[in-house]
Image (cartoon, rainbow, N blue to C red; front, side, top):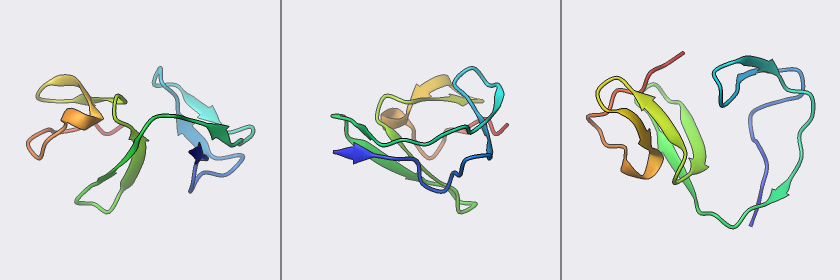
Amino acid sequence: LYSTLEGISVGDQVIDAYWNNERVLDKFVYDIDEEIIVLEFDDGKIIRCTKDHKFLTKNRGFVEAQYLNDDDDIVDV
């Protein structure tokens, strides 16, 4: 399975794993052996991530994507 970031271009601003704003300098394709899940939100946002990717929620702290539920309120920065 190969993965690449979709919808992000070189020069875009993104938030890194440490909540810092960073500019995308380059994109590359890499081989991954993890299942990718797709999260779809009420506002139309779609996030593709690994099952163990953690999201900060207002009600339960950090929660792995595979354990998120409809009651979780993900912090939006």
